[in-house]
Amino acid sequence: MVTYSESGVDIDLEEVTVKALTQKLKETLEFQDVITESGHFAALVRLGNQALAMSTDGVGSKILVAEMMEKYDTVGIDCVAMVVNDLICVGARPLAMVDYLAVEKPDPEAGRQIASGLAEGCYQAKTAMIGGETASLPGIVKNFDLAATGIGLVDLDKIITGEKIQDGDIIIGIESSGIHSNGLSLARRVFFQEAGLKVDDSLPTDKKVTVGEALLEPTRIYVQAIMELVDNVEVHGLAHITGGGFTNLKRLKKGISYHIDMLPSPPPLFDFISSQGVGIEEMYRVFNMGIGFAVILPQQNHHEALKIIEKYYPCQVIGKVVEDSQGKVELKTSQGNWIEL
Image: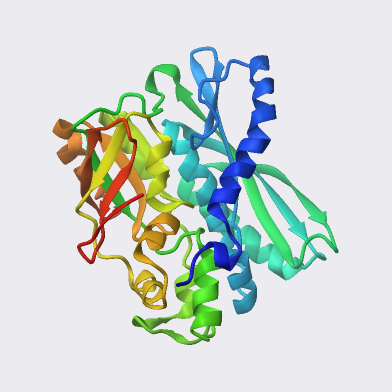
């Protein structure tokens, strides 16, 4: 059975490492009026009657697929998406970003393509890329790495932390565009090592696209849909279904569990990965499985919420919240099996 850790990414070890990093850094929180604790999707600092939200992220090993295809005009969209999709989880409207491009050696054409993607991502998110840094790091970086930091603003009375989530709340799932920018280490191992495919081979479960095209499909940006939603409907929780799959829901509130029993069928890309020996529980712990974002809100609001979100992306009710001190995710897979995350 192929696992994420065998592909070089140990989620459990990452969690221990993050705790080791944040344990000492928590001492610095006393210097500002920090609202959210570490572990949420975005950090919040009080600024008068508003809060400044901050988030940082990168493209990850999806860059290696871009290198294989010699196509760099979409990874910038992924970079913006991974940051702004976290910022909106606290109800903040993204304002501006700065990027960090580390290269083995400067490549003007690759840089032009990367900038094109960053600009497109900013256009979709309606945010400004106001600066950044480029560093040449031979011996440290092979080819390039791309990351960014973003800031947003939210009124104090409109902050969404998940604390209002309660028993009986409805969970709406918003469709992803594919693998997004998570789990690529496992996906690359499955496609290029286990299955022996190449980027220009047809995806076995969807002959209309190549493996490279399916893997490089840029991350969906949910800013406009979520901003309209929170302006018009009471929302209790927002979760970016990113690295860690559906376990991201656990980042919102303790003392509740998530009962997910109405998931749509996953995209063909995930069907192939699963068919190559990746366990079903591992699939839902690593990948978004077709749901890139989750909205949690009172049951009486979910019809209005669906109407708003459907103007932007396909969505559906996927489950509900239940009061449970164990704080687990109970999930019914597309095969009809129940798993606990």
